[in-house]
Length: 331
Image: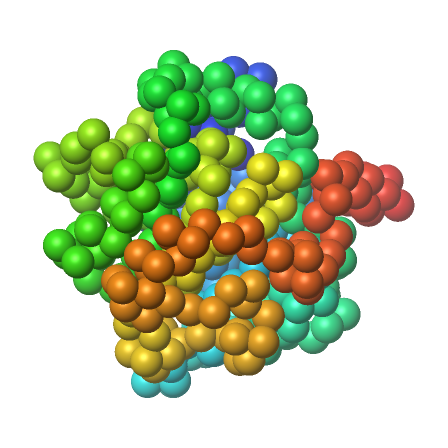
């Protein structure tokens, strides 16, 4: 398995279980050593857009499967991103060559299948409605208990407070600002602890933000967003796919969407069509609205949201994916 730096922890866990892992960098060394290995494989699973695929001659004996890295999407990508249409014709052709390399797209819902069809301009026949394998953990009590144990080792007092997890997605400039008004809103509940968790690509920024921490607002770079979801009574996000994960947890209470830059974000990078129809809570536009929602602490009904996006996420997605591709290998 090849991996990038932002999943080094997960790669170490796989290595501990006997899986051979190799650091991945899109460079000449990978072309010389990694590509020949890939070309001999019968199954190639990808969890993102990888540019090098556009230059490969698709091996006839292999199937290339897109697992992606999220089970839903609020923001646009691929052809849905307005910036894609501004790129050169050569760039656009290169993008499409990568999209066309995927034989299958493993998805958890027809909704996500439609997103891929429109974002990558690929046919519906390539969608495999099997569920999102990484979602199984949220429906596993054993995994949730283990996640809480990991948190207890770093921040044992979190379990004695209402935990408000603020997990915004990253912006193109990869900066993060916690304004005085936003900070005050986040701390509206005197009995709560606010944990700020930034996108994985902003790990360095998160470490730098630790100097802003106090007893009420905290940063834990050593803890994953996934683990922190298990102790969060309230998740505050904006356009991040973390919302689709949190909604699966039986402990999820309130899910808030703080979208102060909604108009700008709708233009760049863009938002999925009709998202207000399926979002489980109306977007909060100002710190004052966010403060009011935090104090109200009302439960969010995510049942329709889950039926729409988490249709096949029932805790057995990994089992179905393995069985499906095991049949392929044995045909």
